Image (cartoon, rainbow, N blue to C red; front, side):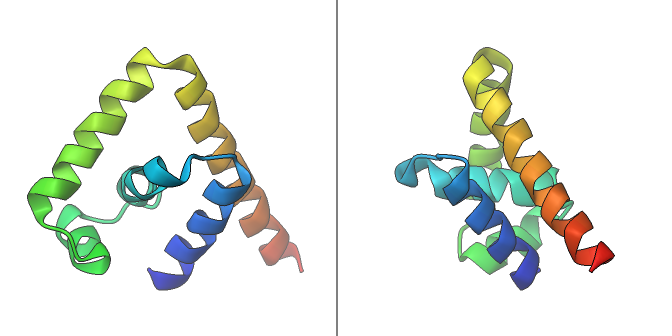
Length: 90
């Protein structure tokens, strides 16, 4: 989990993510994109499960309302996948 989240953190920095919202987006993508369970993510980020659920809900609602945020998340996932595919090829 550590290396995948670390790569995702680097990708979010390149996608022009605001530093104040980057942590919430990282928690959201760790659950939704990487597929980790809420208790494991809460333990890794040293947060309560309620805080993790709140960030998940917050980003989920924002994803439906904000088109720019949706495009940013899609771009982050694409960049992450390209990096993973390049790693597999090499």
